[in-house]
Length: 187
Image 1 (spheres, rainbow, N blue to C red):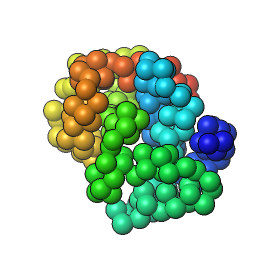
Image 2 (image 1 turned 90 degrees about the vertical axis):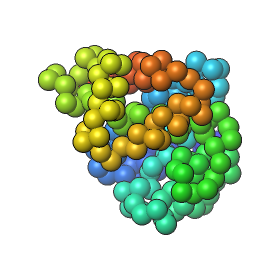
Image 3 (image 1 turned 45 degrees about the horizontal axis):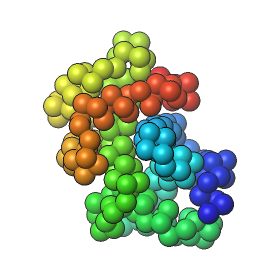
């Protein structure tokens, strides 16, 4: 479990396969939210954070559903990552068929699309500052199907339901987690 808890090692893998700023920020934003939940619930913060950090690391090179996140799982296996770590990453997309049967897998799924969506809401604010983003504005944009149309709203709502949290509280929690890392995220 050494690799799974070593953020610097995980970061080196992320940066080896992910070059675009937007995908790196997505990884950092999901990591921020998932780590915050790990801390709240007394879970392993580094392990949870690294799963989130690497959940899409292969997407830029292998963006099709027949390759992502399957190829990433193979790469992680070759690098000595354990099966639970890899299965949690595989479970973050519905099409893999890997069940979300742990608190971590449910948290990753609930934070994945929402973290990216909150960043999109931030970018349209006049100041582009996370400080201006409120739950109300995120919920309003969720209803606007033309805004960030690539974000799957059903995944956001189903993730919240499966995690067993209130949507307003979840959005607020994620906004606050992103605020903690605003410098890294550039917001």
